[in-house]
Length: 636
Image 1 (cartoon, rainbow, N blue to C red):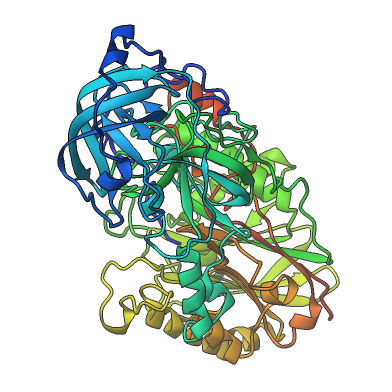
Image 2 (cartoon, one colour):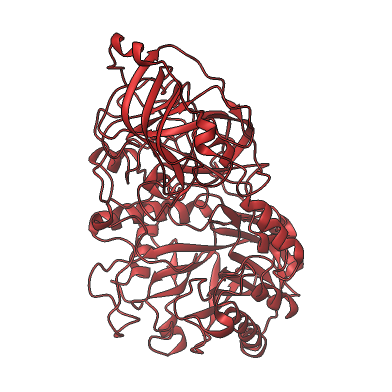
């Protein structure tokens, strides 16, 4: 997808201070993090734990909001201690013995900002005002007594998928256990808010990656996915936490201790809350809070190892890689050479560019590809100071001089600024020792925001293949009208436009690329911003192109991108009729989509320690898209 510079919050929407050093001083692991604060209640307080109290279940009620509001007194055991000043939750969770009504929750949040009065296992009596706050029932305390200490509460088991969207109401504020082995299906906000989304039965797939949008099974799968997600969150409502407590094996996140989509957690214990993460970017949702809970734990296990070596069968290797805005310009960017002013993207300064380049070089060289189609590189021409030239120089410096070259599209076509007038473009790298470009063409129809690029390559054995790299219109809804608005079928906005791009591309290849190449073998690659069974891909299939990723891996499993907790592939490898039998292997190289975005090259919103601990000049998290690698055995 086309993205702007980055998503994390600007300073203006960070109203709460950063985590202080003492709040999670011992948070190098999660087991036992329920014992964070000492009790300051005196022994004399125990004398007041008498008299009538209201069952917490009666306060909670069986509906979405509190059944009793106003003055109440409750008595129960502290099962989650999250006291203190912001950015803590500023209170604690109390659970009683139950009211014998399974439809009501036996736990509740007690709001007591700035206080440090209890510890987990304390039996307490609380008087205060019951009310709803952002969808969660809470008591604002006016009086508190500690009745006893060292009490235990058995967690209630909760399983995914949920029976209905409101089925967690009966556990709000209670200590719960997730006994299943659950899979990390999303961690986009791990670095920003310290949260991870988990699901049962493995990662969740994008429905339109598996079924066409008009297939009823697509809507059913989306409904199932919606009931099969839960957030595991840290104990704080701040942004950009340090440490980020959810890495593997109970240790904080780092460049060497990642947390990948596909990793698992079993028997997580925490308090179930309905809260936000302190900012509207992560709104109210059901969250398991293990940090600060009574015997809370959430130890993530490495179930999805980082790939160690990338290999595909074939004599000629072609890759497709979305660089997520590789710019070597920090100010004065334009929409194409000499175009109107545009916001600069990617690295904000020389330090970030150096870090980004190191990771891109590691990623691209690891593919060991003879031809590499690129997306999201700065559209600033092909001169020696251009982004494509600088990246090529860095690749050659890391290997041998002349190992890689780039196609100067302007020179090859004789048309200035032929790549289009977007801020980014598609481009092509190749290894001169393996192939020679013999024909370069650009589809310069303004229908395309980034003009498709076709380069016909000839191997040392005189076999030819035309590689066509593309970057279709994104799914973002800005400016969408008519049938290009979101139709609610899972394909998001601009689907009609992308279908038109697909059919125009296929016609251009048939009428222009193939005759100019003198060979029918065509490989269509790139970020088509369409999942495997969406209309643009089906249009290309109708035009005679075979989805090689679906053929080799299956669309029910394959992915190159994770969005909103669901996996699928936007990055395509489609072969013409004559080429498909010559495709020997295809692989989505999972070095990006599974990795937390906070492990990228960016330096902002990171503490001094995180600039080192969260960064490595390796191939992981160079982009939000995984590259695709295709192995060919070409016939002459």
